[in-house]
Image (cartoon, rainbow, N blue to C red):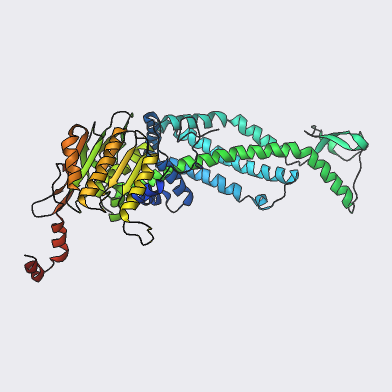
Length: 505
């Protein structure tokens, strides 16, 4: 059996490595905040959330497949959590199996343990079938519909009766019947485990003579007992291996079910926390690659909402056909927050999640990369500009046409003229390769150039500032200004009393 809850027709590959430069992406977008909520303290769930978000999907149909499954989970969260709990119970129960504590590889030990584990698994499979029978009508997605149909069909009453009969026989309450032939040097060969023949009650009584030969091993005949054990092991070896493989097959199903449901249970936990503090949530509309698009209503930053414990200001953006979105404006006006919200929404959309917006629509991108300014680091062996250029070089080596690059105050470590020229040439080359760029900057010369030269393909946004210097944290269309209004921040920090206000004029 297969779950197929994250991909339509194949298993989720948890062992796949992260994409290039994913550590920078996770740091810049604060992805750990989301993963911690989705994990709820469980390292396994953390790993699944991390792998799923970093290994985004590139096919809108595949994204919608997950979205429909997540919608079922949001509609029936108790059932989704119960299924996940059963998978966890199966894996932990098998691990804690009493005979699993021993390292004996003898056929008898393997057979005995496998019988115990299969009996344990049988109870959980019955519970899965019961859930499928009771709740299948409440689920609409193709993934859950197929899973529940598989459980109902393959886990029939006849299947469980057959399993129970085999397990009862393999406990050998009437002894072990093995056939063998005489091989070379009169040694036993061709040991085969046989099903005991049914006997009448009269034949079971120890009366009269028995057909065939027999012998008994004396109580203290250790060599004879060891020889008999070896014969029994030869006869049960094939059955023990087959039973162990059956256990592994069922265990692999439960492991994959746990892995794939871990993603959806993590999404449920994240959705619960975000909606509890009033953050919006919607299923985004993934568009096929080819034409750049980024349209949103009420787009907000989920990480900021989780940090503050309250809903944060959302923004509207309409960037259909725009391959460059440049954000300028007042310091501490919400530019970096908006950039992070756009990057998180792209990642969340492409792994099949909801996004924190009232509406969101974007084209699927071939990877998301970030180039954010870094604070001073005493371990640096070169200047900040060299470090920025080195990081950008690594991005350029790996980003492909159709990718998305988020830049936050890139090349601000040098003067305005040099920083603007470096950024202009890099952005122009990226746009020529079909890469979408979202760029937060205070470099007026850079923003002014793209405002003048690339108006049809560029969207210029500006952090809103009221006349008295207050920030609304809204990002609206607007051409760049030659100031970031840093004096507003200066006055707020230093002009805290009448004496300072007078001194500042």
